[in-house]
Image (cartoon, rainbow, N blue to C red):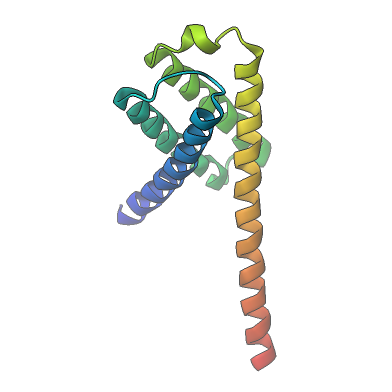
Length: 136
């Protein structure tokens, strides 16, 4: 049970990190002109953590990568729409193509950062393994 909790929290906090940075970039660029209230910030943090936990879908052996990706994308979209509705931003973004384009671009950018981090970690592990092999 403790391992599950640690894994859950790891995914949750990774989601918080990505969501926080993304929210700050959106505010900085004035992509959508909305005020940063305590309610907005809390909802973005909760949503971000939940999206992070969705990454566990990629660990399920019963799902193919494509199934996990489509599921993650769709549930993430539902969480974002829920957050938009909760914050009363529906009329700001719902009918704007920029919202939908922005969502897809942000999803792709975050995905690219995650893949880049994974590549760096794999390279580091391979380097350590190669060094150990050379010592033996």
